[in-house]
Length: 112
Image (cartoon, rainbow, N blue to C red; front, side, top):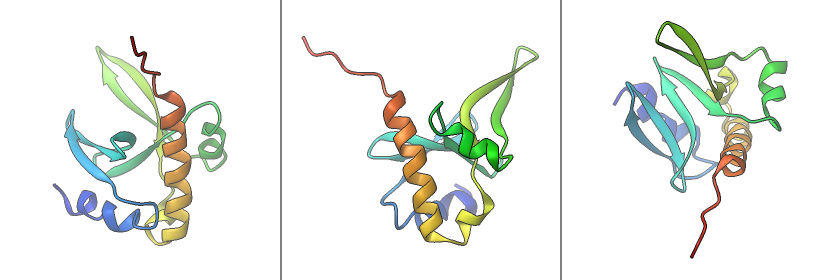
């Protein structure tokens, strides 16, 4: 893994333990086995939804997108603000926001 990815434990220390797993040429960032962030090209993106995406948009943080069959596809992840890398309290706040969006997006499990 890269130094950037290895440093995410430190960035999110006040939030709690995070796990990073390689996926699709980047990395998924997990807490309690739930993906709340991703890293692509050394850029951290955090999960967002209808409840939280306005917070990212207000700061002009771009949405994660990738090319598929010549078209741009957008995912529900937005670039994390640079300030979180220097402010552990702010990193925790943004991680909680992203984790809550991931919780809301989780599909319910049905038990028979």
